Length: 426
Image (cartoon, rainbow, N blue to C red; front, top):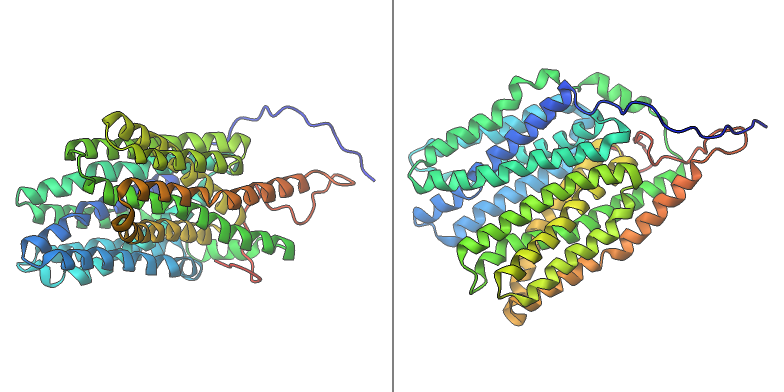
């Protein structure tokens, strides 16, 4: 039996984070989100201005969400079959080209179909860029890199969304449509610098297949982590949809509060990545859920600007950590495309379902109590977070050298994710 050598301090230079393919991936993420947000509010505004009414505006947004979720369901399988470049290129075309239909003289006749197709493109782009980011990051800095992706993806919501509304308000909706088309198609110019195609699929097939115990962990992660994240995205959708409707909150105060929440979430996601790389991402989930729930519960005290901003800071801080930690943990335990698809699906499904249910609840309880109930929903995810931490800790303990210094066969956490035919193949 071999002897174990004493661990030596890690003096290695940290792996390089940025590369040309990763920069191109970040560019694709930024431009696809810019295209998405430029028309997100503009199309319902145009429908209302054309006399279609609020029902048509809701149908436009609903078709956009439907297309996004449908694409996220099939994106992982599409990446496995066709490769990253092909899926990202298809997403860029489906997102960018239909925006040109908004230049038509009577755009309201095609708005629903345009939204559906653009949703398909946005869903494909989101899953592809998330999976590519995870694939291109060095394992020891994966959390930090995913946090940086969060910064890249946070900027378009702050800039492109109000820019599109401003352009439409000044009768320049055609300009916003042209800009959305250009932004959506821009990744096509740099897609040749991305990995993909047959080589990527062969590399995936060549990875070591996990055993039955590992498949059980993968299945557990695929269920727990999206549910944890969805609990937070439900609350995010509620805040974004209903805070502007609360009586007594001026519109400028509401806008500033939501901006503070978005900035706080982006910054906390970035910092959570660095911390998670060093100490473990699973340890962050329970504290982040508690902070986010406290932020929602504080909304019961609506009335003063200080309370509102404190609520936004607390929720944003917790939400950003949950965003990064759940994505990083999924990447550690599942193939990149599957992890990205599940994470994006949890985001959009929770963000869309939350306001629909909240609207029914607040009719009976009022806004403060409904916000508090949303915070309780976040806390309901704590047992799943505790289970995830316990699972990750047990697997990490299993990676310690055994006997002659070999690793146990079932130790996968922290190693490259391996696709498997027994469960959850990408």
